[in-house]
Image (cartoon, rainbow over all chains, first blue to last red; front, side, top):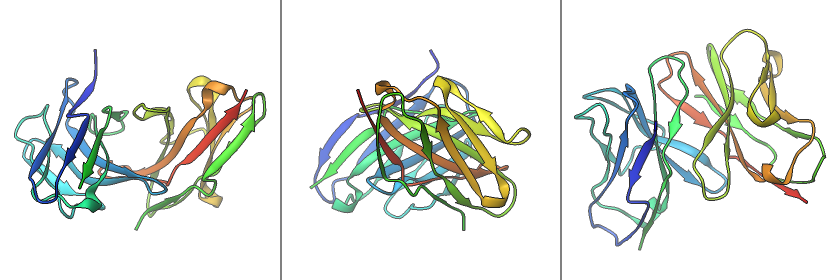
Length: 112
Length: 113
């Protein structure tokens, strides 16, 4: 089954404790992306990657890092989480060009 | 900078009522437009998309949207809503290069049985 998976689905942490949210897709998509969803703001793009070792900033990259060492994986790293990063995070992937974008199930993060 | 506006934040309808959700975009260059739906507790699913050609686009579950270039709009419509259409709807715009996708703030639709 074609899918995008994220782990963990729920996470509570404290300010400053580094964390990683994993994202994996099994569709051999070149393009992968991370979004955060906040009430009234819709989804805002954090980072995206056009292919292995190619990443770029989205609209709200501050406080986040990503890496793309393999085509299927695109982890999101919060080196020093802060309460304003409490949000619902979605990973997505699609083929290059005009292909449909598939979203993961979301990771709900609470930073205390 | 590109932007997408959804002016209706909350919409409440009765079953069988007609639906129209507004979406306006600001984008330089050729634009691709999308509507996504997010059912409670679920991830986003694509309802329909417009890249080029016929400005009236039909999607899944009886939804359609019309691209009106002169109005920078891509409104979502459904002639008769059902209780199962209760969800949050997001309009999104992106360029042909497909690097970035900008979402609107979302519209929460509640359909009363």
